[in-house]
Every structure is written in C-alpha cells, then in structure tokens.
View 1 (tube, rainbow, N blue to C red):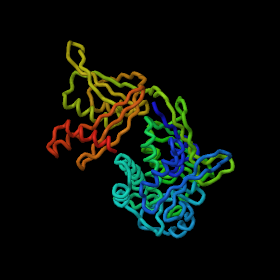
View 2 (cartoon, helix red, strand yellow):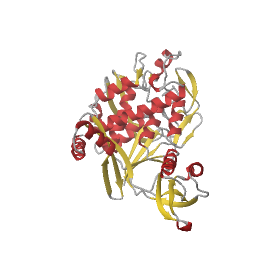
View 3 (tube, rainbow, N blue to C red):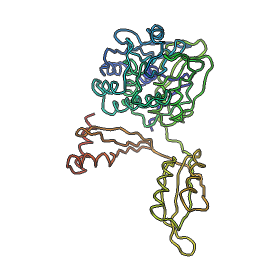
View 4 (tube, rainbow, N blue to C red):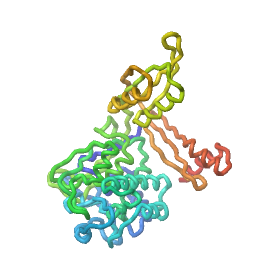
Length: 427
C-alpha cells in the first residue's frame, strides 16, 4: 500500500506542505512548472533551498503581484488592526510561521462564491482537484462560522481567501493528486503556543478556527509554549481533508523523504514538515461488535433503530435472521463501532430496541484505503469510490449519481457509467 506519512511535529501550513510534497515528486522542476501553469491570478511559485538547524530542505516562495508572501505581513496587520464587519481568519502574527498569509493586498474580502469562481472558473485544475480545493475552503468556512457565530453564507475571508492562500491550497491538492497515495497518515500536530494577532485583537493559539478544525477531524495535537502559531487554519484544513489516520508513523519501507521549511528559523528545532512516502500494509484496527436478539419488533421499528445507530456513529449496522426460544423466528441486530463510541451506541440500542441485554465482542479489522473523487458527466458531478491496498485496486461510481444523470438525460445506466469512465480517463 502506497503510504504518505506527514510529520507535523513543528505544525503545518500550506507552503510547508507544498514544499515537502514537491520534494517527493519524481521531477520537482516539472512539478513546479505545472504549479505555475495552474493560472492563479497574479501568482507565481518559486522554490529555494533552505537550511533549518543544519537540515536542508525546500522553502516555497509565493509571489502575488511580484511581492513575496509574508513580506507585507507586519504592514498589513497594522493597517487592518481595526474591527471590521467581516469574519477574518487567524492565519498569522509576526511571531508565527509567517506563512499562509492569505490576504490580497488592498484590504480585499472574498466570499466563498468569489473563491469558487476563481477555483472552478479560472484555474487549470483537474475536476477532482478543484473539488478538493473547495472542500478545504468549506472546512475553513464552517470553522470560521462557528468561531464567530455567523452563518457560513456571511463568512468573508480576509487572510485565508486571497490569492496566496488559493495558491497554497491548490498546490497541495494538485501535488497529492499527482502523488496519489493510497493512504495518508498524519502525526500529532504541534499547534505552538502563546497568542496570535488578528484583525479582532490577540487570540490564544491555536486560533479558534484551527482548534475547531482539529476538533472536528479528531486530529491529535499538542502545544509548545512560546513558539507562536505553528498550525494555521489552512494547514489544519488540508490535514483534515487528506488525513486518513492520525498517530505515529506506521511500519513502512520508506522510498523518499521531503522537507518543507517554514520561514522562521528556530535556534533549537528544525522548522519543517517532513513527508515520507513508502510502502506499507494496513495495520489491524480494533473495533467492537455489539449485538442483541429480538423476536418482538416490527420491521419498521427495526429499520428506525438502524437509522438511529448509523446517525450515532456506527461503522456498520446489519441484521441476521436467528431462531430463538420457543421456536420463534427472531432477528439479531449487529453494530460495528469504534471503542470510543461503545457507551453511546449501547444507549441507542436500549433506547430504540426491545432488547434486555447487549453483547460485546472485540474484533480486528483490516481494510483497504479509501478515497473519493468525481468526474463531470454532461454537466453533472458523478462521485467515484477508489479502494486500494494489499495488491488490490477497485473503483466504483456512486449509483445515486449515475441514476440521477441517467434519469435526467434519458440514458441507460451503463451508458452513463461508460461516459464517466471516459471522462475519468480524460482528466
């Protein structure tokens, strides 16, 4: 299984992830040329060698209208330190990584509609990559909405939404699309420590949006006092979008290592994201099987119970016909779940079934790595599930998407599937 491990012991930000992934590509110069061919308005990418604590790697430079990303950080912070009527994200202070400073010069505020217009209307990106870019921005917008107590429709990006951040997010999404790992594993993330200055004043590290993204994606994190902001909202959203597992490095045969350097040079620690690409087999995952037998529930009640169990976080719910006491036919209801969800699902079982007891079995699960992409078929998006690992690769288009296009266009289902496969080959 092709595995990418991201060591974020010094945090994560868009430019650091870009630089680390660029070092993993077979031809970094060609990959850089492709990035510059994306067509982000006014933006150019440049890479340079950098050394942090004696460790050599790549530092990405993003220029917007000829200015280097981060060069105008202090000036723009002062100019925008007053309260605004828009939501601002907290990508930087002058004591932080000094990257992902995604403000377009000139006090511009961009709504999600404007960002989508740039990403889908102006950038030279494969459709699945554009979808992933918008997924990342959707994650950031949802976090900003919760942090500031406003609807997502009213979120305006000041720092995150401008052209240098579009460049960072698009670059990471495109490089990962080209590297095509079967799974991405992310280390616990160092968020830094202290405070970060934004348009609303000083806020604690991690910034509110970053903390909410890490919480929502269940990404383990830790702090380093006095280090400033090490993980930005953009970095956290990218890890949430691509990370399939979070924890220590899995057992793997490493084939290539990339170092993406941050702007700051700490005296006692290398300021970088380390990316390692190699082969591994998926480790067994411990899960629980909760089960109970009933002979006095209607089919409708059983169906409702299954819906509630899925809504509560069950990995899978299924029924098995069984013979019970007094020769009565019955149903065994089985629930697969993660150990952390045990108590919640046991409560749901007692609440929505007639059982008087629930059994528990511990299981080891092996699974293929899974990801989802999409293609455009006659103006509609058709999603595709791709599963890989253990020498196996499978791909399957979502039936609901195929059926919707078939019904709308009056085509046989297999014809729409063939169009999707053709579009995937052309992407």
